[in-house]
Length: 205
Image 1: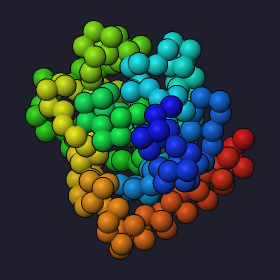
Image 2 (image 1 turned 120 degrees about the vertical axis):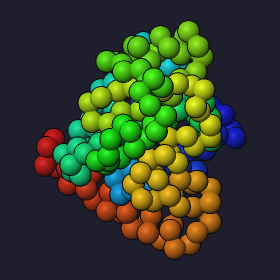
Image 3 (image 1 turned 180 degrees about the horizontal axis):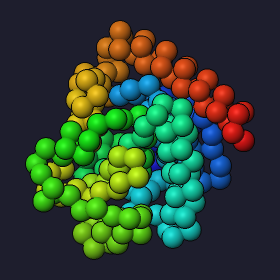
């Protein structure tokens, strides 16, 4: 545990809206959603990124990844995910983003396919991290990709997805946090997401 990390402190605003948890992970509403339905999957242990997970933790992560992805796909009709792999993090504790998204790969990576490497599973991501100690990961529906790490910068995916969703002013969560109007709308969306999650769990489990 890191006392200065927002994702290590159960009393922090980052963990205020927990949808579910087990021994090793939190499933939470993003406190600064780029769109309604924005969820984070966060390990309880202070770990830098998914690539650093042990094989056992990675196996558990994959099950939860599928659970959250299925919820978003079923509830909102589409799903995308991303994780910065230490390159574009603004909170230096692994957190994988999930949210509805109906756009294309080109909407996120404008630089062309030469900067993309399709992958089939998270073992490939882990191997990339072990080799290079960095990566950029995202998915749209079932398609998973690693992105040229040279493109990385703080909030890389968050900014690009926010722009693609027409919510550019939500890319920078720190600025968003100071915007009373945006945070009021975010609070409404979080409450709706909590209701959506509860309804889904009651209906499908």
